[in-house]
Image 1: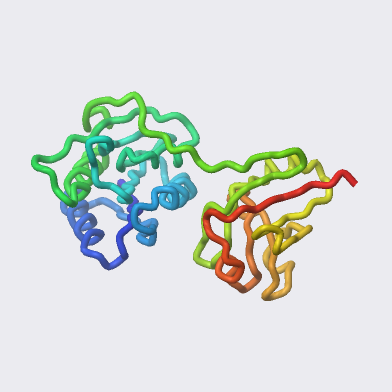
Image 2: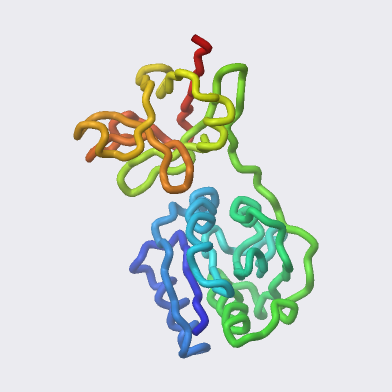
Length: 259
C-alpha cells in the first residue's frame, strides 16, 4: 500500500490540507496519507528540512513525501520530484532538498505546471506527481530531467583552537533547544578533556553532559546528546528556550581545558 506523507506550513484545520488529502484519496483510493507536520512556520524551509530529514528514514522505502512549505513556483524556483535514499520527495526548488539529503539524488525531474498559473499549484502538480508514483510509474515519466537542485548550506558548528562554536537550529515542542553540535564532533575535539558549555554570552554555564533528563533535578538546566546525536539544551520538566530566551540564532560554545 503506497504511503504519502505531508509536511506543510498550513495550520492543521486549513482547507489546503483537506483539499490535498481529498484529491490524493480520489486519485488513489488505496493510498495511506500520513501527516508529519502542519506546524511549520510560514516559508520556514530550514525547519521543514529538519523535520523531514529526521523523519523520512523511519518510513518504508518507496514512500512519497510532499513538502508543501514555501511551495509556490516562480521563474527561479521550479517544482521538482526527487528520488533519493529509496524515497521520493516532491517540493519547490527553494534550497530545501540540499538540507534534507545525506546522499546524492538518484533522479530529479522538473514537474510541468498544469495550464494557467494558480495560487495553489501544489493541489494539482503535487497530487498528480504523487498519484503517478503511487500507481507504480517511474519517476522518469513525471517531467524533464534536471542535473541538480538549489542547495542551501546548513549551519555547521565551527572550531577555534579549543572551542566548538555551535548554534541552536531547532526548538521542539517541549522548548528544548537542539544545536548543530554533534556527539562525534564533541568527542573528536574534546578527547575526554574537562569542558565548560556557555549559553547566552556566558550567562549560563555547565560542565556536565547528562545521559537522561532525569539525572538533573526538576526545574534545573541541563544538556545532553539526544536521539539524533545532537547536543540539546533543556530544563528537566521545564521550557529551556523560553526561560533562557534561546532562539534559532543563539550561540552555544564548548571550551575544553588541557588541565
